[in-house]
Amino acid sequence: MILYLAAMVAIGWFAFRQTKDLDDYMLAGRGLKPGTAALSAGASDMSGWLLLGLPGAIYVSGLVEAWIAIGLTIGAWLNWKFVAPRLRSYTQVSQNSITIPSFFENRLKDKTRLLRVVSGLIILVFFTFYVSSGMVAGGVFFEESFGSTFLLGMLIVAGVTLLYTVFGGFLGATLTDVAQGILMLVALVAVPLMALSATGGVTATLDSIREVDPNLLSLTAGGTVLGIISAAAWGLGYVGQPHIIVRFMAMRTPQDAKAGRRIGIGWMVATALGAIATALIGIAYFQQNPELTLANPETVFLLLSQTLFHPFIAGLVLAAVLAAIMSTISSQLIVCSSALVEDLYKIVGKKDATPKQLVMLGRLGVLLVAVVAGLIALNRDTTILALVGFAWAGFGAAFGPVVLLSLYWKKLSTAGTLASMITGAVVVFIWGNSPLSGVLYEIVPGFAASLIVAVVVSLATYKPSAEIDAEFDAAAEQAHAKYQAPKKVSV
Image (cartoon, rainbow, N blue to C red):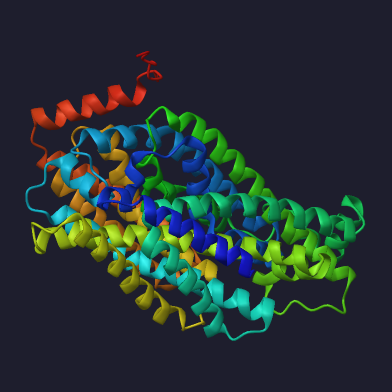
């Protein structure tokens, strides 16, 4: 574990040496290769939810909870296919926007700065909850794995993640994501295979699961139509997640999205299947070994890895859980930092701040958000999955419709975008904190309301703009242009 944590800090130090200005700190100079962007997006997306939350939900309720993974996989593929190339080209065409809020402002030529401020505030609010979920996962991890206190575990995870994120910036977060994504993949293949061997193979495992409850192997048993729709609707949220789509903006070219999609979806399918298999085989394993107890279903992956592997190998597997947690926290902290500096401070602060001062402010922003998220994480009444679900829905509803419309609809207006974002965030916040959230996942009404408001208000307030139309056409042309490798010049 110490080796793993030291490696993450070393990568952060390397990234620190490569970071010269705010563009480097926030977007790594738009130089990510397809594999790097894909693994980084996947690792920052899945978080501790993949190794703790999802296996725990399936362990308790069965395969009906797998609809979350199915919906996410479909949503991720569509995101890579339709959003990635267009967003990469449009953000560069539109005044080289390096954050989602600045893209909205530049895309719509908003002179009021309201779009930038409101979207920046939405990012800060929902990401604080999201980062908090990662810290809860870190505390649970150390508590269950090493018998430490929840607070100590949370502080270790937060401290190391802050160290390489504060100094390494976007590049540090991205490079550590790649290492962490590979580690997660290996662990999610190794643990179910080893557990399957211990339970006596496929047939014996299925028999043991049926002895516990035959319905655990059904994709529909125990679920309702609205429940399945709610689970699959997680896929709606992808297009609005700033910490994921910022990876698209950082790719070398729009054409890299094709290779990135293949690598990213391949990684996602393999890890999701591994997480589902871990939960199901875990049911059989604990049924066959009644002397073992699983107090917290969200730790089924942890307990299996500690029980089945040699301590050193188990340490590497457990490091994968830390990798999932830390990769997401770091990515989200960078986006929060960019919202604070690029989208809020630059509007009200000094206009002549030097690149060095802006980078320093970005680092202070990371620290500030981490402290607030840590205070929220001290309340352990909420599960990891619930915290993630609330933040995911908030971003999906507030940003998803306007990201899609900004890329594919010329008539989107500033008023329509502003009304849409506020509507999506408010609906999610109210619905998610009401009894209705137990009936239908808040992203469904939030996304629908946000989309309708965006279209209706935009049609009522749209004014033609030659400049916006020209950028729109240029972005579309660049996104679909064939990639041409630079020619070598002999001297």
